[in-house]
Amino acid sequence: AFYKPAGYLTAFGTSPDGKEGIDAFLEGLPKKVKPAGRLDYDAEGLLLLTDDGELAHRVMHPKYKLPKTYQVLVEGRVSHQTLENMSQGAHLRDGLAKPESLRLLGYQGEDSLLEVVFTEGRYHLVKRFMVYFGHRVKRLKRTAIGPVELGDLKAGQWRPLSQEELKALKSALNMAHEGG
Image (cartoon, rainbow, N blue to C red; front, top):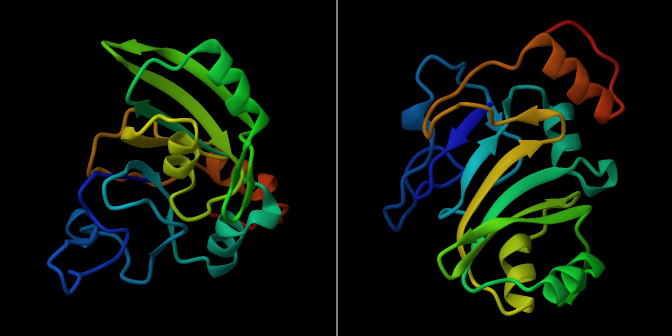
């Protein structure tokens, strides 16, 4: 479990345009671990890193419907009517995007803090979904992937999954649990 800070690529090394990847934070991890999924450059939060190719595939594949939970700070005050509309989904250019769950956590000045759960990970899905309803994303933080939660990790920190987390994750992905 790794807390990717905003302003880093979900990749290793530096991109041609000078954007840094996450490798600087991962001292001590085996070189063969790879991110199971992505987070946008300006997004932050939970990434799973693994050397298990099948686990990574299932975490990313929409067929397994693994819920991913986000806290989203958006511009403007989201009304209860808009929340209701959001819960019905949005017809984006690549199909219907409907959250598993959605709730208003509160207001920060003129902005709204929401928690949204999607079981798919299409390109810029959360951002496009919010813009569809007229609210630009100011901050996007993934707080959970299935049963694995960010917990009290700070930006740039990582920790191994507990046996319980790994077992719950594999169970959620219909994988037999084989050791650690």
